[in-house]
Picture (tube, rainbow, N blue to C red):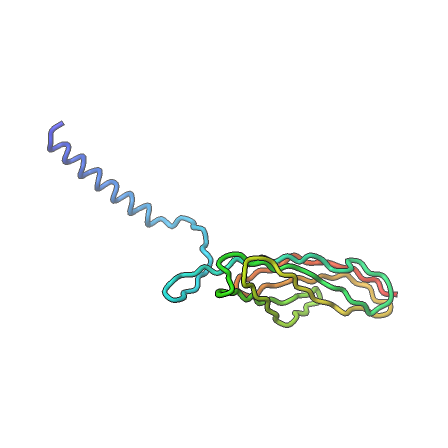
Length: 156
């Protein structure tokens, strides 16, 4: 192979790699969604990951005199860059099967972990029977909703 042929092969290879690389770069491949970030003091800080679990209604099934109270307990958890100097405040509400949304509440994390939250529902009257549920809806910083905690009620 002559030096001219070698030169041509090298130029053709560079051209091929450049064209193919540019074409691959232009193709929009699915990318993993990166959580939103907040800029502080010139640094990009990822928003902590928030988890939510509705544990259960207590009692899950009630028969007796009414009105009565059903208590709902759940957990909100936070992971990520959390400390006493960088606390994370989670805004949430309880939502119910009858369409009522409770008042906005907050829980603050100064370290990674979980906190228990609870709510009560005063419900029922003589001869009233129903089934329903309640769930926790995280408003910020990482919106999501828990599974529903179901209950049944039979009033005398």
